[in-house]
Length: 365
Image (cartoon, rainbow, N blue to C red; front, side, top):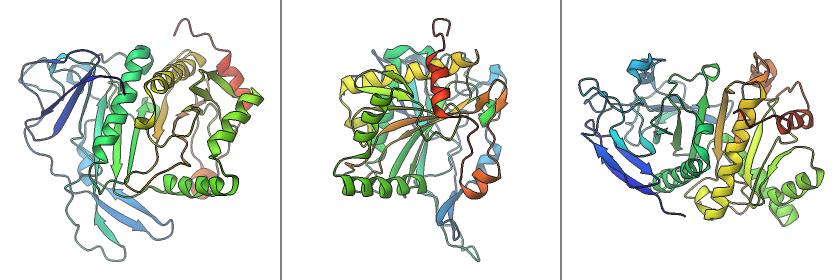
């Protein structure tokens, strides 16, 4: 991976923080924290016997910050030492720190027995990734170079988190827009590290390994070849990375950004592949913003393979973007068929939506 700068520091409440930059990092003043009191998170997991999956409980999150005014932005650099935020003043591009309101924590205690259900400690980690010191910006404003830095930050965090043998999966993600439940407007994302393989990824491993066994090659190899041949759903092909609306999209403008060869984790990519992936990702996000001439609300997840459980030659590393709007000012709501049966209903064909995204004008975004 290409060089980038980082500085590991510790907050007054004991939480770790890492500052990342393209150039030399300099901190002005002390490392802040909104509160000097150590985080006391007592997360727990309870087993859902019908769905066969764990559900996380974190009652302490009820009091987390909710849409504060601009003057009380906890993700902006501290300007008043009497009212500290999460970030220090200084020269750096991005910051990552342990969440004050985590759903999972590496120090979670064993819960008291829960009658009628299996319960255990909510072991894991939750980190906040602040994309920029500029509260008014978004990922599309960062430029290709800092977008590439973000990919390297995600890769670095994954490698650090997997050093704990209890961690089995690392999921970087971003929620953007109040329409999808964002509680802080400052551009940021999160990283969840789980002590088990979540059901979505566990099912994917099983399905993709079956394909590899039956066909002798990873699913992604055929998928990329077929999409390049069809030229129906591609948005941008940069050689080493591409973006598209998948032919099985569940959301109207669902967009995937992926390297064109199978890879398990971001850290498995070359510098050239990471840079290409960054260019294609920024292009995809700009297209979504240009579509309705507004910042598209979305959920974005970085789909990496499980960790600490061997090799994953079957895995198609990808970034999945789920836009919340299905038309101008019309939200996609999950209804009975989606939540009750797990069967998504899409009101439009992926080919038509890909054509719309290809046709947008990017100059003014």
